[in-house]
Length: 469
Image 1 (tube, rainbow, N blue to C red):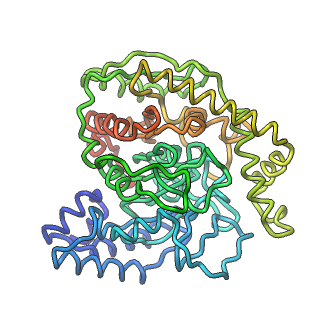
Image 2: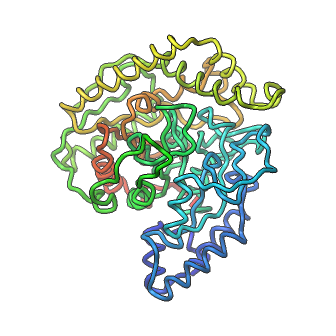
């Protein structure tokens, strides 16, 4: 059965390990085979280390043979975005300006927790340079492509992770999300991507994007996302903003009965133009949620587009990071990132504090909104995937990536948990995502509502012919 290992969810893989039907070595070899077959075209990975992966898999296989697995995901093939420090592997963040030839001796909290729980790390996934935009291409690795149509972008900035999971190159991955970077590519690639409450997954080193920065699990099922979040959601002394450990487990919380809860459905947040086919898929799924027992009312949260404040926070963070780069980097980095660097240098401390005040006010506003509604439902993306190699849809007249990701970045500013789950397909067979947002610290609730969406829109039966899995 090793050739079919990558068609299973992580939960199914672990069950197969437990029964002896499948081994971690077989599953890891199957993932490596898929990488070998498809990654030259799709460019999901910037680094693959078969020797290390198979050593980890053999150790896991021995633990399972002895009846001693060290975690709920022991032996599951996984990947990690090339934004996280990883002992023994370079962390280049998609940049030609970071020196590969230096000691790589530190694991980020995310990497450390994955190792401690026995996951098999296959390698590191591609990112735009410093994770700065909503698509995935960079001067170091080139263009990453959507597995549903390689001419199109998978989104970003965790695009490599989304492609790896969607194709079965890895069962699980962890991405970063400062303005939608987990949810954008998860939506475009037809998988589940979760941005938990800020601080739920510890970060080290601290992101220069500050309060916008999150890390989150990516998988092909809500159950797997919950299992991976249980691994990641632990404290780490290196992140002073990390939250206390959760009470209970997400793998249990995901099964909570959410019928009867109050949900607001905002088809456009009051100001966003949405592609008609995207809108139709989301409306259909919301109607099915109502039939399933969720109490849904159409209601906008009632805030204006906070893009100006977001741009200040984003560009000043980028400028702070890039100011530490070697002399001459201006000519070597992604030129779109260079423009963001130059923009960030124009803002004053007062501008930054004003943007932070806007962010705080938006968080208070959403807190009050959630006194009336348990969750907010929106489309994840207002558009369909577009041609790869472009920062904005060609011919759209748009100038920057936040202009086409307007459903995602507001909830980085508010630091709320937000998840995208598959909601259907366009006439071209491209995935459409539905976003569920909850109040801060309601990660368990958001996962439970996402599980209900998954049950009423089963991915396996909705998948069109020619899908990547």
